[in-house]
Picture 1 (tube, rainbow, N blue to C red):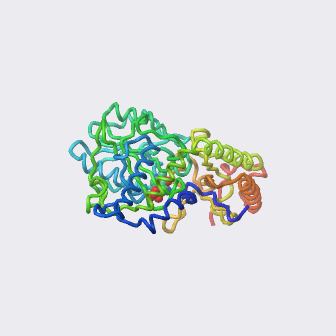
Picture 2 (picture 1 turned 120 degrees about the vertical axis):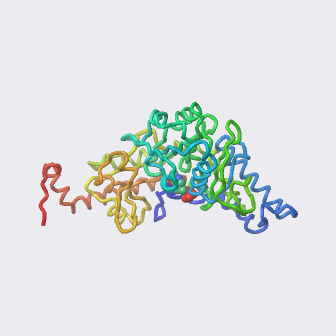
Picture 3 (picture 1 turned 120 degrees about the horizontal axis):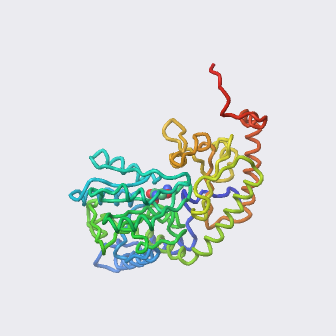
Length: 404
Ligand code: PMP
């Protein structure tokens, strides 16, 4: 087993060697611009892009013509929300989203609010799930878009996208889904899920960084988008800019591999995740699971270790790449807005750690992590006066803290 161990696969993934191999010729021999129509360099590049487009379409059950290449899911989310709002301004000025979306949806929504768009931010329950009936209730005759993610990037919960898609269809409102964390991990079908726009990105499924896509439905209904990028009119005018040919080749290969291995890989990751969870929870008390226990993607485990700061834990686990539930925003260390939206207290949110298992993790690594986490949590708790008080039977809620 080699150190350090990478267990932060929601942040990004290692590029699969088979993906790298397929990309390399597109940096060297086939370096052409896919928009060059007059020579074989261009034709070769264009052919490769079209293969990539087909592979992306296949993994979400779409038509290749419905795939627009972008620089990543951040751009795809921006294009979906801003593009729809601008294009459908005459129909209405209201969009619906929910509080645990990725920042690229939430911050885009906030910007749209500044330009006069009304945004409804739906709540989630204690498990992190949106109630589809809340979506139905929020729709007005001015609603132009619903945007709800498939899989949450912190707690891995899978939103009831199919139900929301049905409601959207019934009411004739467009439905965008940020499926960035779900593609290649859970089955996605834009037809049966009633999705009109879908964002995804290569680097979350063992492909390269900086290559994303937006699925834009072409039939029933045909979705129209105002472009965010003006220029050469690439990607059917929706996203100008020279295509990232090696990136697209890699994205396509990553999708192809994911489709082949998804079932087996999901089962393996679920086994590893449960081993990891049980290994830690059986030996440590006051450890809490964040997010729905079963309705979550297989590789995700998000736990709060009471009386221990997540950041301190990670400092003590330097040879293991994990993520804490505190985001360093400017000068303050704020607990995750996702965990807070579930009603989890600030203390427990600060005590949270996200374990993101992926294709290249092994059972040996899982066992190593279990041992090191137990050791670290015990050591930190031994140094914690709060934990000492709890051990003595004092209920911390009853304590009146003095001021100095
Ligand atoms: N949406 C979700 C749910 C994500 O997890 C991420 C990446 N953390 C993004 C969007 C942004 O993707 P990209 O890095 O490709 O811009």
